[in-house]
Length: 436
Image (tube, rainbow, N blue to C red):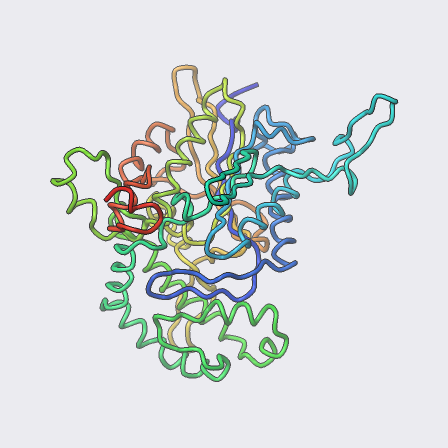
């Protein structure tokens, strides 16, 4: 029976699992390739298992109405994964998550004409089909199935912050700001103490070295044993300040959240200055259109979609919390952070970290009455060490009507490549040359 507590479907943003060291240019965030570890695969599978127990288990109070829990019905799924800067880390991660969400089952079988029943390998392993796209000279092959691999040079939606000159300008402005310079001054004694553990890596505060410290602490036994016990937590804390400053903005249409949308090509000249201003929240603004589409589809009872998943890096999380005002009422969720003190003298309460295999869930709930509309609420689970979801607010409320959720965020969404090109002031890369 559908009632006001019924979950009609969910839209998920999930972070990839544990990986090897990852380098990003601190002035552009252009990334280098890295690789998912077996630990990362396990983390993603554990996340999928958690999501299954939350949304597919009939005994769960949050079970999605009408979803198939046994053999996967790919018509009920829409899955996308960033296939960009971190190499295959995010794309491989989503497969681990899906194996936890839809584990092997003996129901995944087929009966042959001779009466023999064949169960899929590994006890009924469910291979969620993916999208394969390649171009050889003028020949393009596209097989569109359940999992979409989002290539940054073909689609800006999951990685809108790279090759974006206005975003790069925002980063430079942040690094020159008084708050950044003050924090860099606070961090200097710690970074000088840390330097002997970093080899030849720069300790300039623009080049926050948290990722190196974190990866080595997990995978290098010697490093783990020699690093002073508070250093990892301190690196987390400074990384929180750094990434929160890069990927948030005081204005919802800021570049930290994403380049500002160009509504239409008409009247471009009069709007151009406004749309090209810096906007740090680009990491979520290019993702918003797919969120709107998925929620709208789930609300349509004639559409089979029940669960939409985008596998991404940590950046969209930070910007999403910013644009929904979740960081205003729940400041503990902002940025990459630690839970300890920065030094033995300055006492700081850190906010929660967007850890590996974290997930944000936008749940769509059935209307309270036939004349009402579905409502959206937001929940966050911080990695595999966090045992449960935590409810977040959206625009200061525990839930909002779907139409309000979309109307509040639609003005800052970036819907097309052309809008992104103008917003970023990009004229050549990622398909922008065709608009000039």
